[in-house]
Length: 179
Image (cartoon, rainbow, N blue to C red):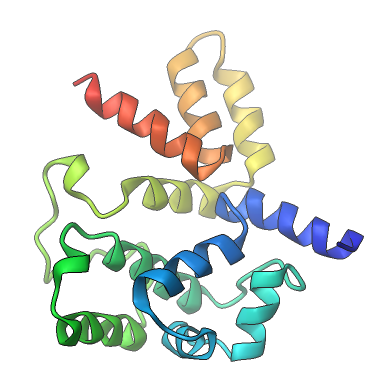
């Protein structure tokens, strides 16, 4: 792996919590799509998707594409996704393909879950929000400033904002199980 690829994968880890290739491969597995078909759903060219997956490129530069990626991940992570009829899965993927809204826009057509565990993937949403407002190093710096007075908040910033997605999920599960 060249230095550029390693650098790009490191940036993806910082920005998205894990390399984009892992996220895209998970979607490909859930959806039984080709890379070209997934690219079409997200609004990317197939070569761009391939470059993001391999680390040739680091960043999803179009906010609408990132929004569709997050929506698609939330959709396939909904409880019961695997038991939906194929036609319903296709319809939901097509809804994501047509989506133009920001990830921060509330979908008024769906009732918001009252139980955090009922959300498709609250950790991804939290990470996305934190990473939209600050870099991982800024979140680490903020956590250091908060350490003495607010250690629990500092830990949340470290794990949810700057940590790996799998660690953030474990942290979140631990928090929600304490209630």
